[in-house]
Image (cartoon, rainbow, N blue to C red; front, side):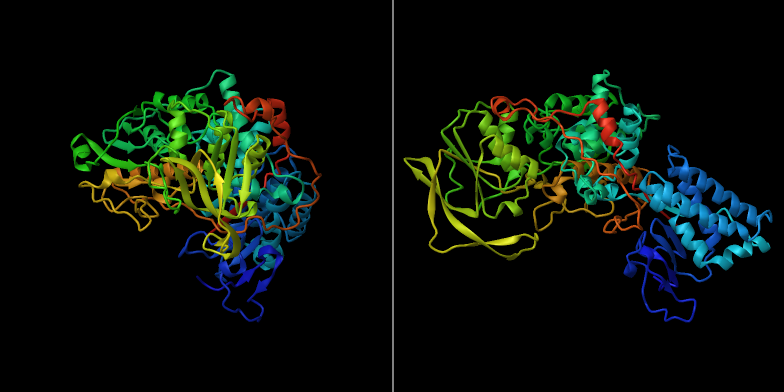
Length: 639
């Protein structure tokens, strides 16, 4: 990409027009968004300034295009930026039409400063006119030329809209948009907007790891918005009003699509394809649909009536979900003979990985994988509570196993983790709630051997650990302490140290390629495997990830499959990942206000049942919490 001719990005001026050394700095070098690798770009106006790569770029016309897009994002509730944008647009057009002189530029500057000072949200104060002010200040002669007969063109420019929270969301939901609708009491409209990229809002609103909240700008002011709870409030409001259906396909297509696996990745793809008009059949090996959401997350976190309701909505659109229908071995040629034009593999990662300790391969009922333990529970297996159970691992699966054991009446539930709590990957909220429920945590301990007597598990021999330098995961590496062996007595050991996909079904004539990690190998852009017409996504490709990541893989696969069946190339999606969207000019004062908190079931009550621990927000509380949103939209317009 060309070196920067001029930049005001983040308030730092680089100007190669006045005899200053141009240098070799590119847009990426100064922290400016670069829409796509190899993207031809002459200039860009964004929330944080102006960047010019081509000295002959038409800055006034680019400014007009920016104003047009900014007007779409202006909500009008405080009217400040909406009126300001309209007036600035009119002044530019008047200059080009010979109806205004150079004095109009002074007025535009005053308007821009006034909007920044008086706007009620971050969009108005820091995004709406900030780059316009930079453009007029540093390219004044270009704007003055308008009044002397210069042209102001209505150009078709490229546009991207994001926000720090949207950037952090794997599915890039329009979070400020759906929160704004909740603030105004428009819960149904909010739900429709959420469903554009998340077809399981009630599920994700309960079980999401909400990285969006970590990215929320309010973290630097008071507390992040309760984004996950607000998503849930839109879904819950729909249920309370009777539940609305999903839109039916506008057309019916002949090519059929097969989906293997009914987890979030499979369901999302199936729904998106069905809306496009494709007949879709989902083959599920288990007697329940939902994948890990159904058999890996206990009811106290995700009530199954919520999951089943959202699956039922998808089925009503015409998606055929066939339970107890394993596709093993995979016969793609046979499916093609039945009329299927594309196949999407979304089998998840349901097989537990080995702990790496002696004796774990012995099958005696005293040692079980965490994923298998949770799956058995969800499918109705009877559980006989024992005196002591040890869970090995530090993720959410380990927490789910431990908290489930408490509810089944195990007297002593202990989690062993080889690092410290700081490195524990489980949700901090899950850890706190587990402690409240009586789960014990022992850190810096790793299992070495399973102890058995008379063919029964009686304990686990462990080693104490110390932390060394960070490993590939970024966490400090656990190092065994010599001579520190000790035994933890237990009646049951649950291993929850990781999961992998079961790819045995690919061992036949499928020829679908695998990675060295045992996951299905796909093209990163299209999710297509090495076999034409066969696509894959979710945990079986990425390894164990979050529900929202799996769901987004389904969204992407649906787009790729649609393009494949239509004989077209997949339209590349704009990627702004890795950019610092938090960086912005001073956005003024924001009054502090704590986040809404959901009520939790009393620890003594919840350990006796699998009732949902967390209550949702009332409509009034959700609307009040939504009012804390600063609408931190980031707008980019380039040509």
